[in-house]
Length: 515
Image (cartoon, rainbow, N blue to C red; front, side, top):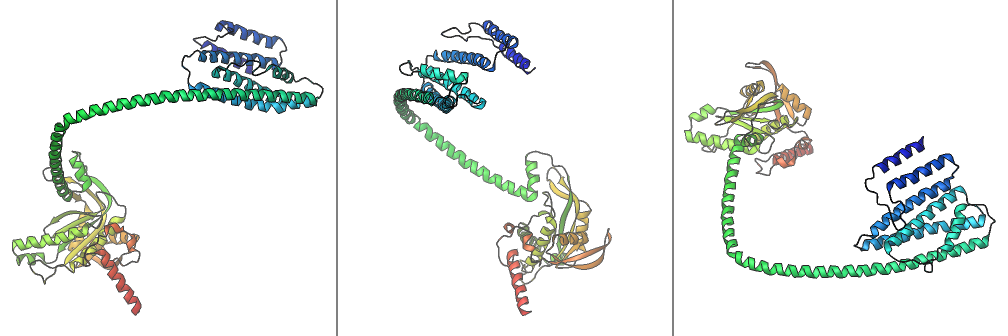
């Protein structure tokens, strides 16, 4: 069954052959039909007679050798000869020596023992066939005429036929020695052929090197000619290049001015809207309202602002608010937070949108609130240097919806009960205190590093009674691990959160020493 499958596969491959040109000096198989006829005859003989494995191998090896020899003869008809042919021939003779060297000890064992084991016999057949095949390939590619005198193979063939028959014979150490000497002479002959081929390789290499040198000289001449032509072209285009340079310089200046103006407009736009939202609007993309599961909102206003405004001129009020908001803006730049808007003395900040930051938003707003209160201790009213301001701060954590409202003057606005609750936290708070909701307190407890104080139940307009807390400080020893040091900018000791941490640490160390 296996043989039938192999026969069908062979017939299929033969049917797919479109061009048959396997012929040579002896016209092995002039046509494909004749080749198929010979092959079918052999198959019938295998079925109807007792042909052994050795005869079957001889038949198929003969076909393979003839086909390979025909291919080699076709390659020889190619008019162009290159160094590759000689190198391939050199490789083949090396492989031939290698395989013949493997057969020598097996052949000696045959004459010395009188018969080969099946495994040794198979090895001898394989390497002997490979040695002959590589030798024939070497002759085809090297173009070296090998005569019987130059490389006597008849004596070696005699020993080869005896070993391939593998018939029982009388042990003979003398015959083994004669076989060994014959094979050594044959290998010496192959070495001579390798020497001749080496000379051809060197000659071919020298010839190709000379051709390459001639090509290089020609290329150099062409290159020099191109240089001369280039000099003339450079001279003719010199004035044009000067004009182009002047024009390019003018364009560069204009482009730089345009870029600076663009940066100014972008900076103004990024102050009015969050950067991701502003970029979407610049690209004419629609900004859809987005729901945020958890954010923290900050509200603050000035205690007694109505009374202060009544005692100041309009310009002084503007100067007051401008200096105060400038201080708040400087503080907020150090945190992952976004200033939503300012309405009069009210200041609204949110963290956790438009880019979500996990649970860090509550800590960002908490630290910002503490930082701002610390700054307010050093703040003085511009036109009343001896008077200070007090802020009332409220913070709440919860969900909200954010989106862009308006076309002519778009604003990024927040909607939801969280905004109202944060505003109520501020309005029901106390001066210079941070009033936080129960939700914010719980979120800070999960993060850790913050100290709070329970205020109790407070009646919140529109919400009813709520449990609220005061945020005192961030005195936990691990608080510095919450945020990256990149957001703690170096500024004056009065406004630097790092300095605040350092002063607080020194104060704690002093208390520990006294204790």
